[in-house]
Image 1 (cartoon, rainbow, N blue to C red):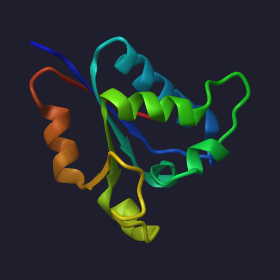
Image 2: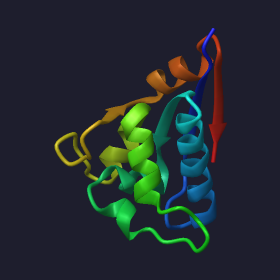
Image 3: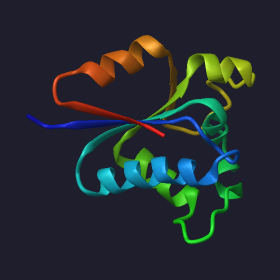
Length: 120
């Protein structure tokens, strides 16, 4: 049975190391052939918007925009419904390939057979 890695990023520029860790782990897993679902919540929600990942900078870390591109190319990226609403982000605002979904979908993915969830 194939394993799925569900990564929830809760931090953005407010906690750059934690944010970069989530994206790095998700991108590394994708590059390793793992089925990956990255969830953007809290301050990481902003990275669902065009150009925002390019603004992120953390010394000695891979560029966030490149990590996000890797994840979008072979994995799934989801923006939390409530987080999007609080920031007035709509489906027409997000990068191609990013979906908006809520807690029920996160729970479904996280408890599926063969799934492993990590929260950063």
